[in-house]
Image (cartoon, rainbow, N blue to C red):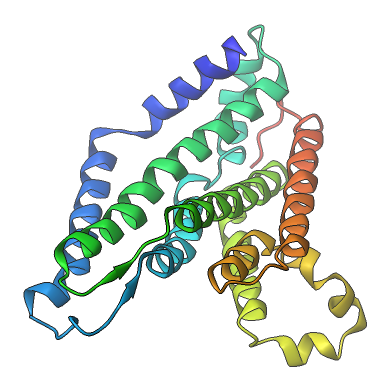
Length: 257
């Protein structure tokens, strides 16, 4: 565990340069200002009841995939190419410890990023708007946890792909995967899936959006969210296991180029 913590701290220090902090700080400032635009231009929101849970759900649905794409590009393949992985494993560090540190690195960044880009702007809306705000702490917390779980699933898929393919290919494939999943969940691809027996049976596994679907069901007051939650947990366990298996197959003495 000590090696995992040490590697995670090193990864965070290596990633968060002054330039990146400035860029992400500027993005956070812009998002915060945008969230207050209706207040600044005096839009008539007094008669509109805002739902805090729906606000953070929409924010998280957008920012979670974007943050994962930001933080996991070439997350393993880059280390193979630069021979950093070989340098790390030349020390008394196991491959699973290295990969676990990558998971913690991505998850910590996801947690911090989601708070700054989704939660805090939503709080600003609640504090500065004069319109009534419906707030349910338990539902909001559950929504956040489920979308973090969805982000963890995206992280596991991105890491797995990065153990297979070189460069930033993992985030391009993940972006397409996320787009197809969103299209399926929004009903855009339903007609196509319904005519394909294989996709109709395994759509929930091919495009694992169980956590976000469970969050939407909970927010709408539905009680039959357990099936979606189980699909999400199964997909997460599968891709995490797959990535840990695949890391053992990487040839660290061969340049990925």
